[in-house]
Length: 177
Image (tube, rainbow, N blue to C red; front, side, top):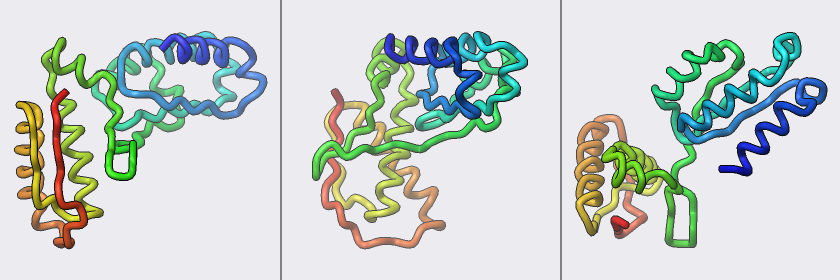
């Protein structure tokens, strides 16, 4: 986190306005990053800011709270684009995928917010759209059970829209950590 803060402060404060026509900010949807972006943009003089195309890309999704914070700072208009990059499952090994959601555990255990389980379910549904439904889902823990229920519900909701594929993944193992 500290590296990112330094990097944004350096690029925003030391000559960005003279070197670049576009600045693309690729961030996770969290409020401290939005605060940092606000400081970075405000560190550039207004006349110079109008010469730069700012773009913000939220990985994996935009959050309402981040958009509200951008509006509160009155900087939404500074961005040419505000986009989402659905970067969900990342291969960790030939048979292992990771969601790389570092705040997921904190959100669930400290903030008692299990909305990250929706992100997990959505990612797994996306995987099924390429490789067919998982014939066997094995889960360990209460969060795994919630994800399994969400997947089953999403399957029912999307059944009319999708053509069935031959399953190419035999087992899905969900493990709470």
